[in-house]
Image 1: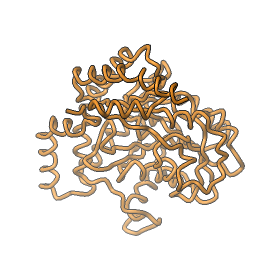
Image 2: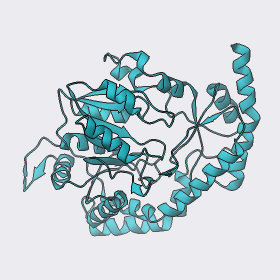
Image 3: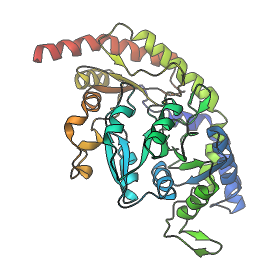
Image 4: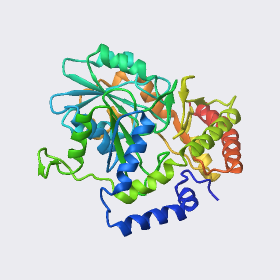
Length: 374
């Protein structure tokens, strides 16, 4: 039996009675779009991020793109983006007509602000700061960087819902922030979902227009999209937000068990700052012979994943841009060595111990293979 990499099936089974009841309520209401649960969910998301407004949309990618569009980013603009992230971070920038400008990372996997400063040009209008793996960077540091360089700040907080730094919640910095509720996230939709949070009424209103054909007052005033969050999705997400604190505590306990159990191995655990309240969306390590280790673990029924195998400057869709491939030593190192272990609230202690035992058995062998081939 394989250890489940994702906990989605177990989570849904655990909540099945509640989820089905909420679904039935929505169907009986007939308000399958923009029903009352959407507004309730938006209020919960805004509160979690310490923001005045939240606007639910169809996906996290929509959320990033709409936040940038609402801020006025478009053709002719450059937007700083970390070289390690899911491709949606950069594609959401490109969708606005702006150009993503890639930046190397720090050891925590997030944007190197010193390299970012060197990438600023007269066309650079914004920075999309991605909080990665369930951790976040000091929001004051990021905000100060944006202010010094006269840049708009949008947080890509797709992986950071519920995270914090010294008491400041993820998604609370800059002009706006974007969350994802993809099924693999710490709060996962039965499909897809996202939200934009902001303290500016004008930004929230623009995002509301963008999510539904630019409509306002019965007419279309913008060229918009059809990216609404279904009412049943919002209702289910609210059920899961109610369990978020407990799930986060369980993932944190698993992460600590991993960190203790893997100590002393020839592996690098992705670090995070002492002030971080981590939600452990991913547990990522770096291994010198990552592919051999992943293969051996899979043979023992321990699945792994790579977040992320391709730096964004190497993605074919962005291959035409002159990004200067020598600028990204840490991003390239991460892409060649990163490996994610299973982590979710529905792993048993026995399964966690099985993962640790398998990694301990094979990490040294993978390193020996690397030395032999070197």
